[in-house]
Amino acid sequence: MMETITTFVTFNMPPDVVDKFKTEWLKDAAFIARQPGQKGGALYNRIGGNEQVEFINVAHWESEDALNAARDAALIERQKEGQDQASLFKDLGVSVSAENYVVEVPY
Image (cartoon, rainbow, N blue to C red; front, side, top):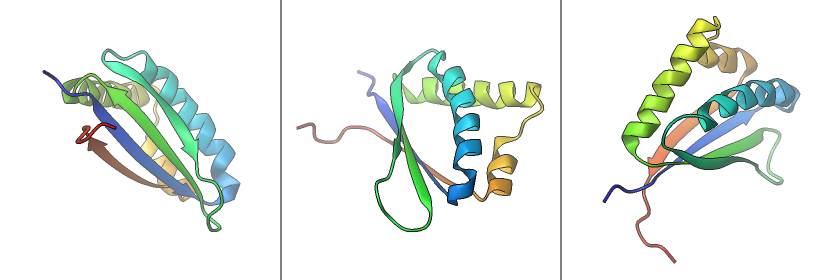
């Protein structure tokens, strides 16, 4: 049995780049949502905190292969459009951290 993969991607940024970040993130999210094996997700905004704004994207995938294929397809799509998201986020001061998980103990 294949286990659902859940990806947690954390984005930290200064408040003045939030609108630009969300515009770019929404473009990617629309593309990713159409990829085979994508089972849904959501972008969460941390309540409170410090001077940095933090979002966490939580996405669910049928398999690690589906996740990797979607990530590769998104990279190719950005390249076709002349975009480099990593450079854009770096220029905006957005730090990104991503990890994949499977359920250990449901409750």
